[in-house]
Amino acid sequence: MQTIKNPTENEIRNAAKALKDGHLVAFPTETVYGLGADASNEKAVSRIYSVKGRPTDHPLILHISSSSQMDKWAVDIPEYAKKLASKFWPGPMTLILKRADLAKDFITGGQDSVGLRVPNQATALLLLKQFEKLNGLGIAAPSANRFGAVSPTSGSAVEEELGNYLCKKDLILDDGDCEIGVESSIIDCTNIYPVVLRPGAITTGMIEGIMNFKMPSGFEKNQFRAPGSFESHYTPTAKIVIGGTAEPGEGFIALAHISTPKGVIRLASPKNIDQYAKVLYKAFRAGDQNGLKKIIVIEPDGDELAIAIRDRTRKAAFGN
Ligand code: TXA
Ligand code: MG
Image (cartoon, rainbow, N blue to C red; front, side, top):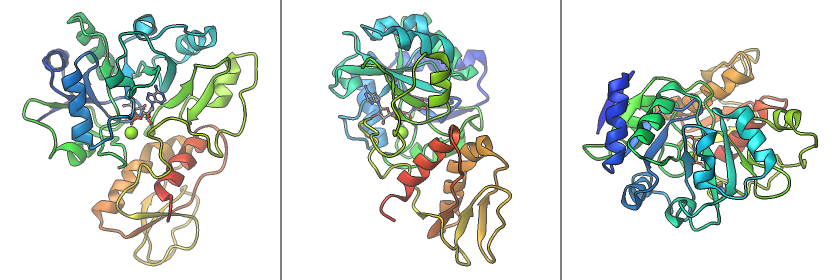
């Protein structure tokens, strides 16, 4: 495996060729890093599953360069989904749509739907465009972490997660830190209403803002129907505990205005919600690097991106 820091146009073109040749390319997006393979190459896609240690019935998100590529992969696209795509793509939003024949079982986990996303990150978009120039149709990419572990939000975190599992000709494109830091919003568009399956930076409020109806409420309570969104997910080795008193020697993550309890190791002090999302996974990793046994997380209140932060911390804390 080779890591390419701040890849040039030429290096990105070579990465697109590597994908075409059946190798894996980890690449940055605005949310988290993805582990990409040619979505039309079953053998390459199967390597994603073995590198991640992920069960094969978990569907992958298909990354495309623009909404003009949507109807290659999906059929019966509802008007509201087209509206969402034109408003929020490129962006941190995945749409679940009825699949076209191109979206094979090895992408969709045998389901009749396919997840599509146009990421909003320069390297990712250039990689997708170059890949399409080589007659590539789309890049399948889950988050570039081992199954159940914390999504990587930097190139070095990808190396840490997958360095031992990638092969010689696989690549990591490293553009430093991701802008948003938590995974895309997943919106199920296979019904008459859009349903948020995984909260993210495109929020219910933003979706309602461009629709003339209210979204069904209550998605934060449970109903994450995205397969693969087990209750325990996004977990570091350290035990994540929400709220409560932190003892000396334990890790602590909270908004900056909350003071650090005595003897506790402060892992992050984000000033606002956007920053909180951006540093959350980095702070989880820092806890593991420091060999901490326990990390206390003080969740942010509020709607919008705070909902995604609470979703991820609760999944990380599941069972603790
Ligand atoms: O921000 C993101 O979405 C990142 C970047 C790399 O794009 N990707 C990502 O992929 O988080 P992954 O595989 O770690 O999570 C995707 C989730 C999984 O829970 C998967 O089950 C769900 O999306 N998903 C994919 N296709 C689906 C489908 N057809 N129906 C329901 N859920 C689907
Ligand atoms: Mg993931």
